[in-house]
Length: 102
Image (cartoon, rainbow, N blue to C red; front, side, top):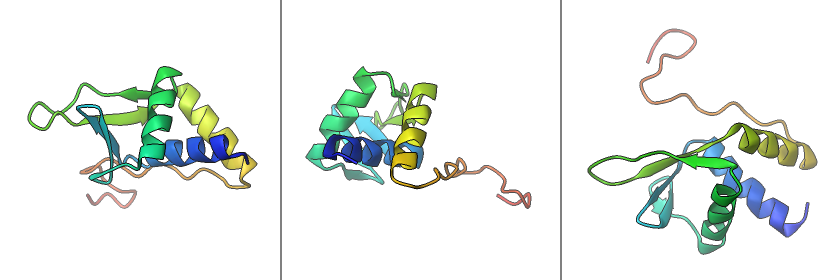
C-alpha cells in the first residue's frame, strides 16, 4: 500500500470507528487534536465526498464525522489491500447491545 493510501486508510478507519470530529477547522480524534498529516487527509476526504460532517453540538461546536456510502466502499477497498476485513463500527452510546443491555 502506498503512503497516500495508508494515510487515507488511517483517516477512514478513525472516522469508521466514530472517534473523529471537527471544530473551528481543527480535527479531533478521541478528544485530542489529530496529527497534521491526518488533518490534510481529512480535508481531502471531505472534499471528495467520502465523509460527511454533521451540523454539530450547539455548545462546543463539535461536528462529528461519518463515512458516506462511497467512504465505506473506499474503506473496505483499502482494508482488502491490507489483507484485513473491516470491522463493524462501534454502537452509538446508549444503544442496546445484542444481549439487550445498554
